[in-house]
Length: 386
Image (cartoon, rainbow, N blue to C red; front, side):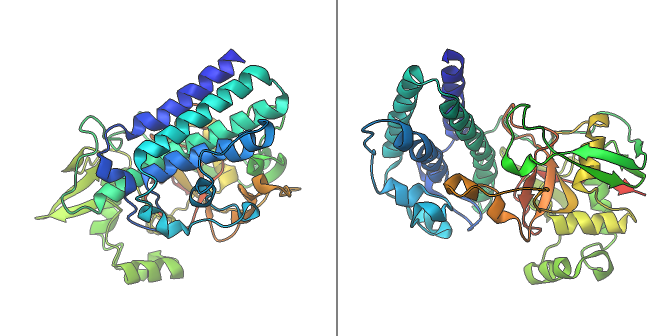
């Protein structure tokens, strides 16, 4: 149990470490409805442990602040009313110091509980809470970057942090996967997974070839210079409408100054590294680029079967698969049933992980999912040809 306590403490401190370069004024920024302020992330991840563990299994537990249930609940309808997602940035109160006090109280209570309760149920919930916190550690990075980018001064978050310099390690080759019946999904008896990965089942795949490499900035720039954002033929109808409505002309964080391309990073604006792996791309852009190349994106099952034969983990990779339940998937009736299942519509699956994914949080069966226009994540492209 000491090992679990140490792991819990390490992960909780990791969230706070991510926030260390922030100024006090940065903690409440919310530049769009799809991002959250760092202060809210710190409070919400703490509320998760309080709500699902301490309130259930700690006798005579007294809440730090009853109002925190309203402001730090994310989307759990089962648990009652909550602040609107796009208004989290208005929470000038509680002050940051109060949120850190909240984290300490909950941490102390969790550690005390673990020292006296070693049930499998408690351990499973602790691991779920840690995995949930790791998800928010990734969101802390992506949300902080997006929030700071909206500042016209293009401020530096950390001059030692970049996260977009990774390059492909080897010369590109095409990996051929033969047609056949393959097993996909997660085995429930293995290590931790989310419920949307369960339901291991067989799928039939036709023969395909998948690239060993990610698409680079240089390759995507060729698409831009070839008029890719001006030619409707490469785009899905909704993607083309998104491009026109929002005047999209390049990936997120790219800017052209005097014909020279720059990119915003955690360490400020820099010259675009042409041979680095492309990042911050929407599904619409990924699909249009693949169409321009006369190729396509992999399905999530093609990606999973081929993943042992190429390097991954630098960018979340868009697939051509809608986010849908696996066979026999069931949503539990309690609040934890709202974790994944209710989002299985109008979203596309991404596979892999990224440079801001927490250590130990990735696996080949992990199913991330976002709406096709969203691109503030460290998302990229890997191509397939038949």
